[in-house]
Length: 240
Image (cartoon, rainbow, N blue to C red; front, side, top):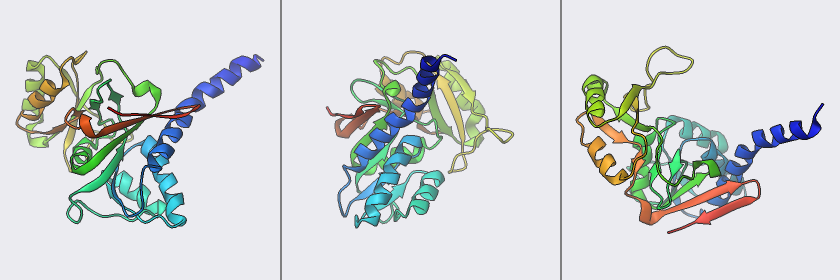
């Protein structure tokens, strides 16, 4: 048996979770008593929520606005008090993950099909904290862009995306037949454009297509974004 090889396999398997945990814990440390925060969707944010749960048991007082049913369920299980944008339209900060982050903190999000609510929460937050492992940090955005689309308009939206040079695919569910349905009752289209040299222009073009409710490019929050990159040695805090 090649013990060194087996150890490398174990480390390669554990490294992403260790990195996510480091980033999540560091993000939780930025939350102060009395804050109202946005709670993103995904595995990295879960580590932040778990840390916040421990601090709540020690006396921390906060409220969270979840970006999805998943985030709400996790928060309730962890004892994190929840609120809404109706009650708190301005948030102190939001903690969320990302599919990709570029050098000026433009982001692609939406792998968890929650980008519409995530964008609403990010817009409401005074600070936008992105937690990520090193694999999410890229020189240029080139991941598939998720779009939340009205079911009524899926076919014309697919056609419009092809007209923009994209390669759109309706996202299919796993462990269910048929398309993914978002928490808002809509469908998700994943569209590849290759390298995206001007994310702001593409975001505008996508969101002006009738039937598109939101796209996964987040280019308007760079000035208030902090990126926390975790790795097996800890976490790095990147700011503009």
